[in-house]
Length: 235
Image 1 (spheres, helix red, strand yellow):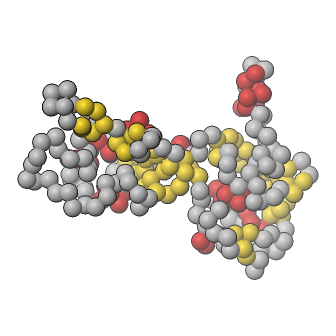
Image 2 (cartoon, rainbow, N blue to C red):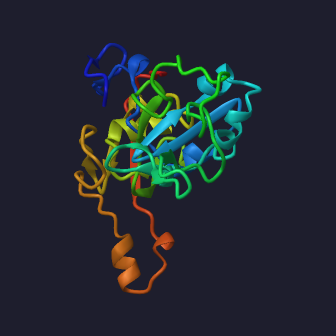
Image 3 (cartoon, one colour):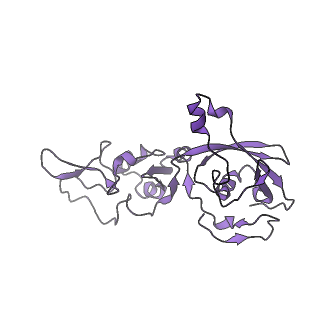
């Protein structure tokens, strides 16, 4: 959780982060995949998620943008050397020179194979270096959780990152219930520690157990019950 500020005003019995400045740490592959257009272009690589929409806007119409647009919404870790975090390279068998490996074709900030007068290298750092476009981490493992509002009996199933805190899961749930912070969150009768993950709260991920027993794990999804605190807070 990025913001450490805690707020109580208008939150009834629920103390938590200031959601006006809240920034999620994790995004699932399915979320990244939704941003698959040039006008809304995300990719992931080496465990992190990047919003390349500003880059696409800056170089709109440039042919060197095409290979990046083609992988919008995808994980492109295979483009990179995990040790150097740079684009993979190879030795050109004809020239013996070290070249960037670009099987989809040369893209933005990759130099041409031969010296050219029309290629400007004054762009600063290549787009894949640094954290200018970083929005968070990619959830290496996800799981489903059911959230049941005991006041309205409404139920929603969310895919969440295994390392997300309950506050981050609450933030995901806000589009389903803008008053989510006005509820006490419980599992099997026990109040959940909102700073902990599901696993740390004793809500085990039993997917491997189901696989071992050759059972369909989708038949059982743990449930969190929400109990209204009567403070009508909207975030």
